[in-house]
Length: 156
Image (cartoon, rainbow, N blue to C red; front, side, top):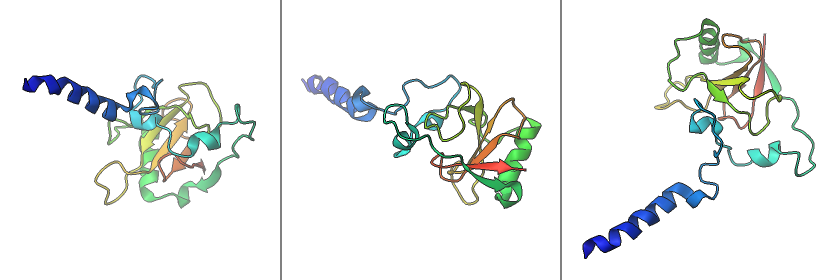
C-alpha cells in the first residue's frame, strides 16, 4: 500500500525539477560538446538580442578593452588559448552559440568559450573569454565578467 503513492511523488518531483518541458533549461537545441551553462539564456538577454520578431534595432557593437586593461587572469587565459592548452577546466573550449546575438553574427561553431579564473571563487566564477575563428587564434576575442550578459571586444 505504501508504494501506491511513490510513483505520483516521483512524477511530481521530476515535473518540478525538469520544468515540465515548458522552458526548462532554455536549451532545447544544445550543440554537442557545449555545456548547458554556455547555452542558457540569462534573464533579459532574449529581449535585448532578438530583433527579428520585435522589429527592434540590432544590438550595438560591444565596448572595447585592451589586453593591458584586462585582469591578469584573462591574460593567462589568452596565453593558454594561443598555446592550445592545457586548460584548467574541462568546459574550456566548448562551443559558444551566441544565441543572444550580443556578438557579431557568424556561422555556428565559430565561437568557443574559455574560463577566466576568479581569485577566491570556489567554482569557475562569472568571467569568460569567447574567441571566434580557428582554435589557437586570439584576434577575435571578447571578455565578459558577468557570465555572458555583456561583452567587451579585446583589442591588441
